[in-house]
Image 1 (cartoon, rainbow over the protein chains, first blue to last red):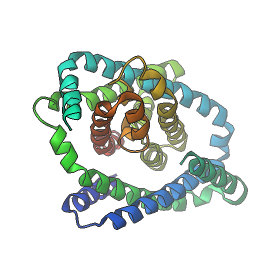
Image 2 (cartoon, rainbow over the protein chains, first blue to last red):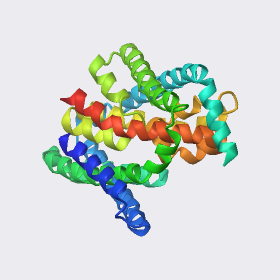
Image 3 (tube, helix red, strand yellow):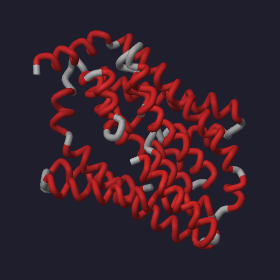
Length: 100
Length: 198
């Protein structure tokens, strides 16, 4: 996990210093897509070669759908409440947008 | 993007089922972590590159809202996840791990599957992937009834993949709020996972 924290810090520092050109960032995005493909492939391969997990895939899928529903409803509700509290700030942002 | 995800998952599971044995799992973990570090560096570059926009929007009049939205997304996700986890018979710790992914399926699933448990990592993947997918489907519908709350649906993905649909459906101002919320969430998710996984 420390590796990931170091990785995100390196990325932020690189982004802040502006030493990367637009083209380099474009290439970075393409590399990111390839890395994502590799990651998902490995993740699926890990599940595919694990017969125990594979046997429970239906149950895991069902649990995932309900968990996704719950986290969306929970966060939607919480932000809806926050939106009521910060009505003035939202108006300020809308004003900033219209003055652009 | 969705095509690529489905293809990777399909090919990966076929390869795993027909050609790989559980003995190769440590090697897959090493590849996973290397690829993950690469994507996290690139996500960090994105964050660093957008600092001017963030600076501009973070004034005293709006700072409270900009911090409150990602805070509410986090608290709402964790509460929702824990309630549902309890109903499904999941351990509180497992439900917490799944919920804090907040849409960043590539990071949360890989980290959880590698450092904790493949089963919970799989649920984390589907849960967070479905969250991103739901944002594409439900944000345009929900935007007809409320605006700011739409920024919550995609979680951290509002910073990138689901931002266009949010802007189109709820307007640029909500898009900016969503972007900053996604930005802050992208920063805190690795810390939350790190904290939870010790």
